[in-house]
Amino acid sequence: MRPIPLPRRRVLGTAVAAGLTTTLLLALPASAAAAGPTAPVAAPATVEEPAPYVGQAICDPGAKPGTVALAELLVDHYGTGSVGISRDCSVGGASEHKEGRALDWMLDAGDPAERAVAEDALAWLAGAGPDGEPAYAARRLGVMYVIWDREIWSPSRGWRPYRGASPHTDHVHVSLSWAGAMGATSWWTGVAVRVDTGPCTPDPGPGDLPPCAPGAEQPAPSTAAAAEPQEGSGVPDGDAEAGALAELAALREDSLARLETDGRWVAQLASKDVGITDPLQTAQNGTHVFQAVDVLAESRAALATVTDPAAVSVLHGTDFGRHSTAADGDPYWITVVDAGFGSRADVEDWCAATYPQLDGGELTNACVPRRLTPPHG
Image (cartoon, rainbow, N blue to C red; front, side, top):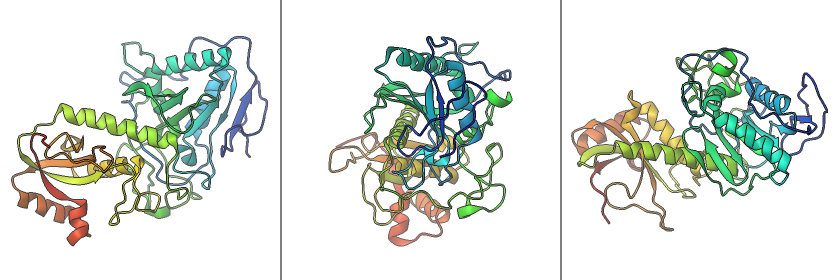
């Protein structure tokens, strides 16, 4: 275990959450501060957009500087709780802890004083900015989502029930975007940045990580990072799955707002139910069983095929065309690209050009023509 040093009121202790190896520990004070922390620099006129869910892509569990800074900010300001950050690559499924960009702030929901601290802090993260901007502090810090006491919150979706394996009654989980984890957001710099990027590298690096796109602020992962996504139990942990499902729901809501079922041709790039087995495709954990994080990853990959993000929609199999549901009755998550196709042949040509490495059944499994017609049974 490698403890993170604190500037004052430091008491080092053991790890308090399974698999978490970086720990901060402070004693509970008589009363907690009600006001939230103050940023070290002034905010820009326009702050970051709400951070969407970007799941674990590599195994680089060292605590990232922005995650450490947020942990220190919380325990220094509120004076209570211990914070675990890093999780060993061999423990459990996919988790932002394994990229050093998630923290668990150990507070007891059953203890009135500790619950008050948690609720004060969460109210600060979700609170409005000077001009009424929602989730102001969370956006400036790059917070993707929070889980606490059987509920999950994200800047774009607010609070909703959480039904993961852990009820999170003994800690507050906070996951950060890569920019937030690297301390590159406006809370620390005064300059708003993109918060929808994943790990990247300026040069070819471990596992052929993609080059940093313009505006991608986070540095490359450390040279000691594992090149491949973590393979563990094959099932991501509850935090990652809940975040992915929340983001998929938000993407669908946005897509429904602009859906036109007028019979136009689109390219269907993904059709999955959580837990489905696809023998022709491989999930992030190296198996053929797809979880919510894999479904979301497929939807995000579709963005790389277009220049206009609005051309990509995430829908349910019951939102258009003939109802498409899994054996358990759940609608499939379907990702489509609407690139102004005039016919089925146009879609087929686009699929072949977009995925030249695929042919035959593999191509039709990854990209197939569909029409956006009204939903029917």
